[in-house]
Length: 259
Image (cartoon, rainbow, N blue to C red; front, side, top):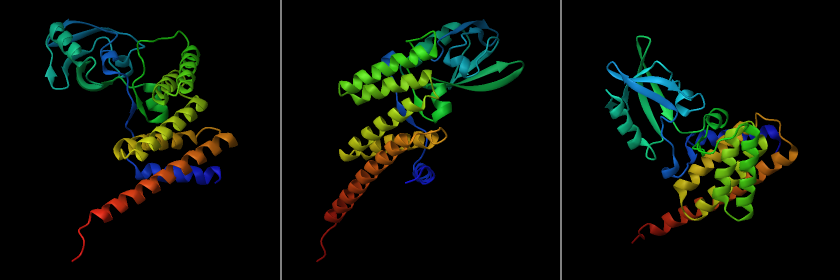
């Protein structure tokens, strides 16, 4: 299977499956506030944004100093006390929120979320990274999380390895080698869930693996990398055929016998 035909096959499967969903998320208790890095004060008719840390998710979502926060989701805000109460209630529970602000005389709706912007932009996959662990240089963060991922792989823990490699990709979103490793792990976990009969989770993971594969073809790939993708596709298709045959047999056996 040449590169062009392999890319076409992956694109076809991506079209069949609904794209864009959460690949893996951090433990709820460890999720930071959606408004981390935002300093506010009481304002006329709302909550005045004093400053927004440039590295924060809120800044990435276009929240800026000088904005007047009027509403978060369906809750109107009139004071910093109400803002603090709502922010605390959302922490660890919500991954995103719609924020209505007033800026330069005009209302504006912003979507704040905890997903990695670098991964979302480059790979169209939603992943909540470990926001609490920060590095001065992106390469330092990438190398740290790759080491963690390899350690988890050697320990036989693919789920933790996947989370670590995704954190590495968060720091270096154009690292095709790490993306290829992630695709292999997601494909493996997808096949495991399909074989276990968990079709929803298996197909969810398969969808994400194929979405990343589709994006990966925009990068220069070695023949070894292409062969790895071919192998993952063949193995996954074999499992899908097995699941389909098993489902069909189960349906036939459940039909009432003719008199």
